[in-house]
Length: 344
Image (cartoon, rainbow, N blue to C red):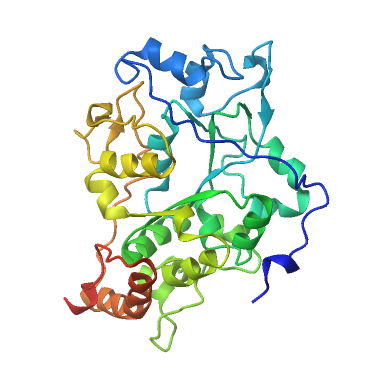
């Protein structure tokens, strides 16, 4: 395996730059119940006007015409908090709940996820930096590209060279259920067809025909399967980032009690706790954000009904993942909620 020292940085990287520090001071009173106070905390003394909130809330997007006139202390900086995965394990919901924290700076690019480490790395550091909005030193700059944790294989060393202080947030979920969700997503969106070579193999007839070879063996080279081999991915990231900079969630725990899981991340980031249960509406199948304003999941993209999969198919897949799950358990000294299903 190559070492970090063998990796050649893009020539436009400023290796002497500094990265933002985490703001640990207390939040103002009533910030979690009063919209006016919240907006002041979120956008007051930032690089954007307070009225930017309403534009930002609509689509997580900020434009230069929303910048304040006095931009003292403002700069573009790459993320120091990276939601790196895992695809189809509720990373969008995780992102949405983190983004509302008053001290976290998050916004979309025009294309959504940046995909710097897999699609745009050759465009250089300055291109990457321009994908972020202006921020001040006390703001935590967050990015989300779930593909990064598993692809490309050299993403950890690239990120370690660009910003070794990055804190990674990763959410794992049942790898079999994840594969089914990923199959449905790719079958509907057909985004897998843009990759060359084709990392996904999607058979429109059924999930089973997609994940098994004609011989009956699990297709380990199919991205539907490979993305659920979490231990391999974790080992790769631990080569370049200390365990203390990686926070791992169990997707089931997050779905059951998102507030507690977000509070743990706030602690991990050194931020005062903000999210409360009253900020969420649990009356629907997928919870909605109720404060500072209402935001619900896109039902066309989230919560797709899963097809009935034969028990023998599920059992075979859980058996396949079992040794990798055991390795993950050893690496992280933690048992995840789906582990042991192969024996049931």
